[in-house]
Length: 128
Image 1: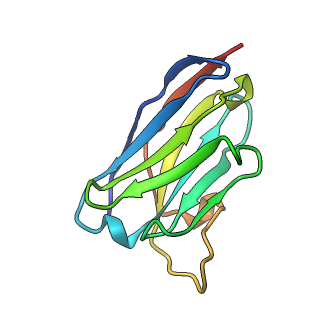
Image 2: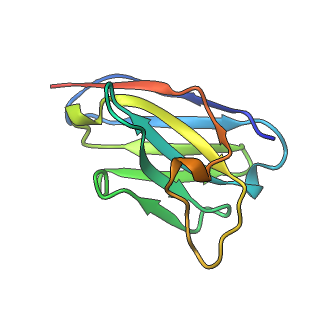
Image 3: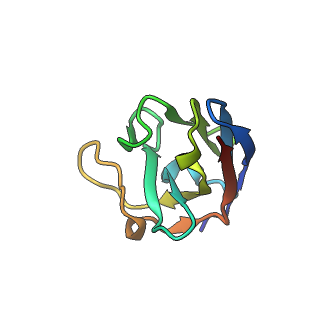
């Protein structure tokens, strides 16, 4: 089991940047693929980005591709989401999640149900 705690959210102007962090408890962090999701008010939770156990593979949603990057530091049990060129439509609660399932090839899970553990979320608000 792993516990996840997000941080780094806040209020930023459009065009600005934020880096979210997700710290994981336990000594098995590197056994989980990690993902970031977000949920805006009145909308369903949506996939943002995922990263493999080693950090060698990533998958970014089209809606944020070219602006967001995901990375991880297994020595620090932490996964990051760097968000640049933020837009008001990026306003949401951002969640990190851990996936313990091993898939064939380089597939990274993108569905909510594929993830086993979730953090409590961190609010990101982008003003216009």
